[in-house]
Image (cartoon, rainbow, N blue to C red; front, top):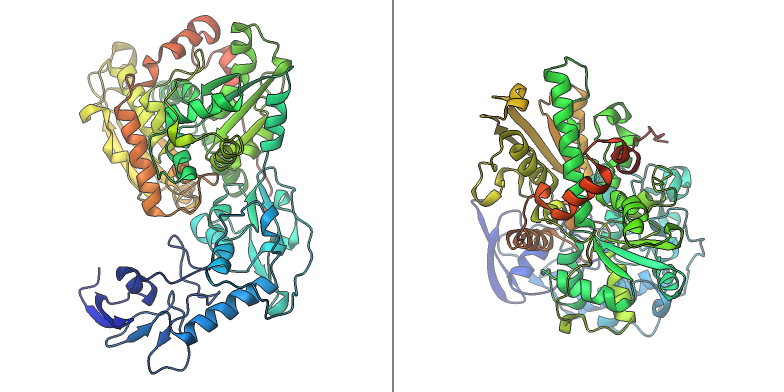
Length: 593
């Protein structure tokens, strides 16, 4: 916050703001809405689209409010005749190059260009239609790219380079030939794209959207020969309410009720396998520490979490030399799939060949993950279809279900029980917190020394966080850990992950365990979550996740009775032979270009 204040007038109202504040930000303080397209709160200033122009009294040129800092005595008009005409012409120029088949567009009703067109009533076209036809790129299982709907605001380019440090998208050519493209104009599936979907979350039109599998899922539900089960990720239950105008909210019971009404045969919970992940991953970490500290083996440390498929693909492309540091655990989604088609199918006497496993995920990269050749542990494709939170919202609306009026219902049994530790997987730092809750108690026989199990040092929206836990008074079998200070780090967003991995690669990082989530805020900010997204929204989702954890009866993964049962009757022990076959995998280096 600047110690210097600047006074100005906006629409004849006085306001005093910090030095360096933009006109756009100052106008918001007075509750004046200035339209934007290229601007996004998560990204750097661009000033590309010029929709946000305002009139500065005494100046001939209309400045872009998003890119112009305030100055002392400035007088701004946000709705003068000159401004209105300029904005209307800018919107009409954008529409002249835009594939405006709005009624059949995937983002109809949630398109920023459409909203501005409606507000400014651009019904009479002033300019010739100069739309260039282009093929839609559907090569990726996660993301669909349609250049005919691109307005060249470059939000996606800035997202991919700034937030995610991937740069799969860039600007090519100039003037009328300028477009957003990939390296050598290759298909999306053939470049370094991590499928994270952050570009989708920030695209103001439908130039970038998730691949839609709603019809295939409905076809499976309608097929009497198929037994269709659905699993829901932690972050979906606090974001689905946004699709119905309710804001971020704890909506687990309503979500379960809605999915049951859609016709799924069983509604189960990815949180069950999140708890299972903690058992497998925690045991793997303790095993690596024993091999390093007692056996003197050269093991890959720090160990890194493997729950985020966008992060995994980033690692395969950018840091292949650190792949051995990744946990061999599959993600909770991919642990659920093979268990559903083996253990669960046997329990309910169903032929796995007739089962269809559907995932509801906050993540577009999960679509890619489900298609990976490594994900066939059951002998079938483990997860058949992945839908985003947004797609689930569409299905509920199409079915005419009044979400807000639904009564809470509970998950079905066997793969439906979970703990609060599993719920917090949805937040950055959540996997780490869940792991520490269990690992510390396994080693010492006591709960973690944090009030009400809340390990606050690993929480928060800082890009990279560090924490440590001193292990003392351990059980005899864990004597080699006596006095060890367990050092951990947490990163979210791939640009932060890149910074952290660079320090690991250079040997300057001194950690035992690292959690990385590919998306800002973790899964609550995933590429399949409701649009719009910004820091304020992500914080509200995170708060709802922690509230859900606080209200759970069971808050530690190892105390989940269904997890205990699956080990007693099927898996036998963490890192055992059957766990190895179904729940673990390895990843391979991928070319960057």
